[in-house]
Length: 159
Image (cartoon, rainbow, N blue to C red; front, side, top):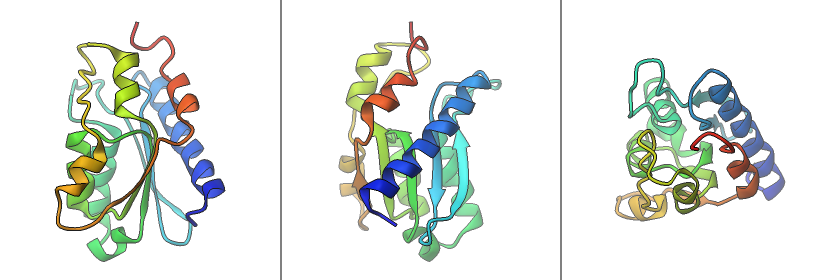
């Protein structure tokens, strides 16, 4: 299930997870893991609060949970849909978990224009494609997708 219509549908589910994260007092980032038959396997929202864990990005949390629950061969056939492009840290986690495909909404470059130099999100503007290209196995990347919808979730957050 990798056609554009399916990608958009799953991306909007990731946006829903991001909205839940925001409603729970976290930053509006969320992602889902979708299996090869189109089943949602996991979801994760940003987890910065209440503990102040700056590494608790949605993508890193999902990659960690996925690597504990599924075998690398299974994850290779999965897609992570994420409301924003994985940062360098999260891209590394996705790579090491072995997730085969990433579809993201908001690019890191555009996120940086939205957040500015906010202390809670000093955006690392390094494309995930660059991180994945440094690895020894291929990770397919699609994005930005529905970027304006993804950006809208950040309205009023970084002011």
